[in-house]
Image 1 (cartoon, rainbow over the protein chains, first blue to last red):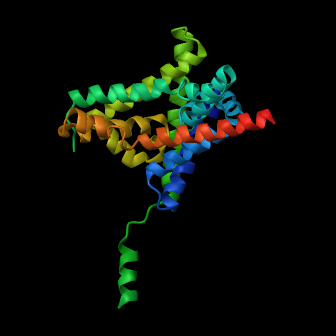
Image 2: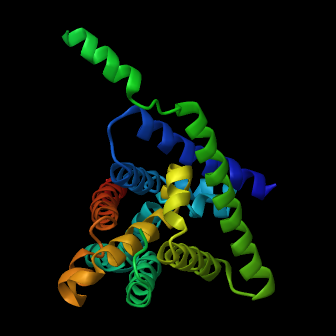
Image 3: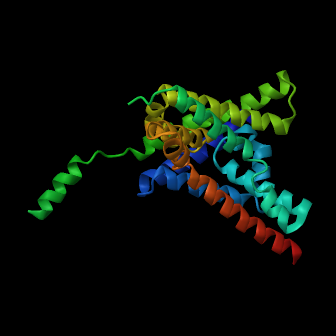
Length: 116
Length: 145
C-alpha cells in the first residue's frame, strides 16, 4: 500500500512541476528552487513529517525533502544548542546528499569525457 | 503585414502538449518514488540498516546512479523526455552537478570544475539554507511566544 502512496505523491509533485514549467516562462532551475523553498516551509508545522509517514520513500525522493531535512536539522540544532545550533544544525541531515553529489561528480568528470 | 507575420510565427512554434507532458512526468516521477521506497525497504530488511541511515543510503544510491548515467551520456536524453519526472527528484540535483562538472572539465581543475561544479545546483543549496533559516527562526520565535 505504501508503494501506491509513494507513486501517487511523487508523481503528483513531478506533474505539478511539469505543469508550472509548461505554463510559465520559468526554467527548471526556478522550479527546483521553488520546490525546495516549499519543502522548507512545509516542515515548519511538521506537515512534511506526516507526508513522510503516509508516502514513505515517495516523499523522500523529490527535492522538497531536501528542504524538509534542512529545516528539520535547523530546528533540531536549535533544540540542542540554542541560536548557535540554528547555524550548526542546518546542514546536519543533508550533508550526505551534497557531499555525495560533489564527490561522485568530481571523480566521474575526471574519468569520463563529455558526450555531445 | 505585422499580423500576418505573427500568425505565421504562431503556426510554426512547436506546441508543448501540457497534458501529455504532465502524464509522462506523473508516471516517471511516481516510478522514482517507488524505487526510492523499494531501496529503503531493501536496505532495512536485507542489510539491517536502521531507518534513518537507510534513507541516507537510498539518497546516495540514487545520486550515484544518476551521476554515472549522466557521465555515460544516457541521462540527458531521458531528462529531455521525462522533464520534471527526473528534474524534481534528487536525481535532477545530481544531474545538474554532474553535467556542469563534465562541461567545464576542459577549463582546468580549479577554474573549471572547482568554480563551476555547483553553477546550476548551487541555487538549490543557497535558497534551501536561506529558506530553512528564515522559517526555523520564525518557528522558534513563535515557540517562544
